[in-house]
Length: 288
Image 1 (cartoon, rainbow, N blue to C red):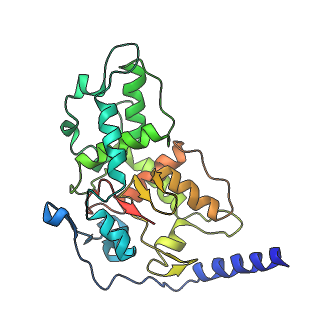
Image 2: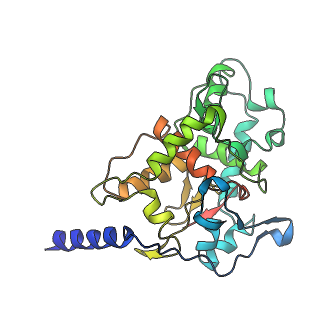
């Protein structure tokens, strides 16, 4: 009986999310994220990119707007923001010699502030024509320049480093390239975004385009913007990479997710990032 009830409940959610009529609810207020009394101010709304062709209306919104007051407040205070402890660990790793070459990240790049702007354009196509996420670039430096072991995609050291790098671009608008050599990857990512997966037959769009602003299973659905990743998630009391979140979403549809760092997830990362072109990088953000 319990299994049957769960199945009916899941079916009800699936039907609710797949109705043809749009049910999105835009935030009625869009306050800025004001950090440390105004030391940093981040807008939470931007004009929707033209390439979306009205899929999200004329505005795009930070996921911060869909969180409760307590969660918002955490992100507005760098001292209270739990992500900052991991940022500190990332900066320490940046300056620490590792590997057979006797180098640290700082040996080539100097202070971490020198890479301001990197997070805003990730993922991007490298010189060999491959679409790389920030994690790929980090591991390339570690293995080929430092002689160090590659970090696992969503390991704590990797998330520490990506957080520290992201913070350097805080406030800069997301501006991923979707034309030229990036176009085929973007097109594939778009296909994945609109494909239904799992026993519930849900796509990314069913939640984050057609039903953002609605509450499903006590979760206030956002537009699924990625400008805040990596994030500290309160419900897991830890940091979460974007591909880790992708995996969780696909598992929620009762499907087997792609591997973190896979071509599929990198393509999806590019497409979803492009939906937020114009929103500021939030650096170390906090979500439920």
